[in-house]
Amino acid sequence: MTVEAFGTIELVDEESGPVLLLRGEVDSTVVALWDATDHDRRPPVAVDVSGTTFLDCRGLRMVVRATEETRRSGRIPELRRPSSSVRRLVDLSGATPLFATVA
Image 1: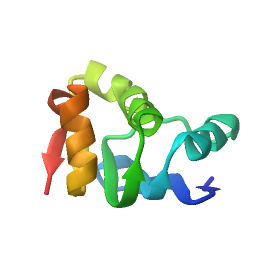
Image 2: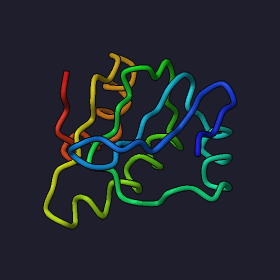
Image 3: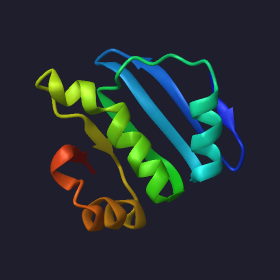
């Protein structure tokens, strides 16, 4: 299931496992729509933010929560190709150690 507003959130399958794909402006509204939908809840092994133009605190909180089970299983989820603004938010929030950042 894809949630669309100004941004999108989608869980896609890749060879390595489920990947959370964020695109556009992922803000409180987009996260609320995602939370309200009946979607696949498997824990992602990676979060692809390469197409994310904006990520707010609620978006980051959703990403951290979605990947908690992956970390509990002993894997460090990838944060793929974050823009400088997304990387800055992750750094300022203290969430950097929660992810293996892939440039």
